[in-house]
Amino acid sequence: MVGKRHASDEISAKLAQANELAAKGKTQREISKALGVSIMTYHRWKKMLKSSPAADNRVRALDSIPRSAANDASSDETIRRLELENAQLRRLVTDMLLEKLKYEEELRARQGPRMRRPDNG
Image 1 (cartoon, helix red, strand yellow):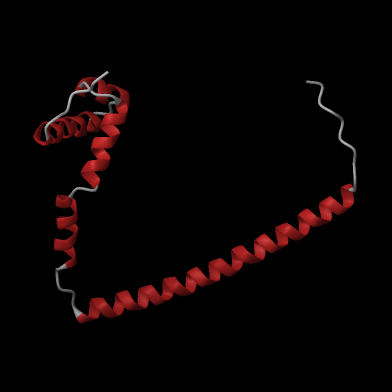
Image 2 (cartoon, rainbow, N blue to C red; image 1 turned 60 degrees about the vertical axis):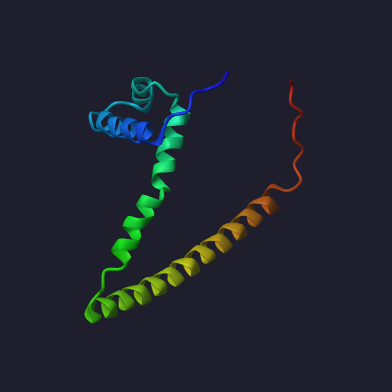
């Protein structure tokens, strides 16, 4: 079955309509039915919209706004603090995983070589 192609302006109009329907609390199934497309097509269009060059241009425009020196210092301090916290959390998780492995080995040693009953199926 050959599907029909939609023009980019038609897709953007349908996505705007979909956003309005989503704001009203409609489900994705209801939205795609109202647009006359499959749920997968609706998802593909949304994904395409997120990765569009226009969205990238908006991000680049925000990045080009100059920051003050005080703002840079506080962001550097925040980054250092977050990196330290991240390192501490990594060590904590590693310790917990090692402890878990130790408990699993103890459990296996206690159970010993038990025979499993064959499944009846």
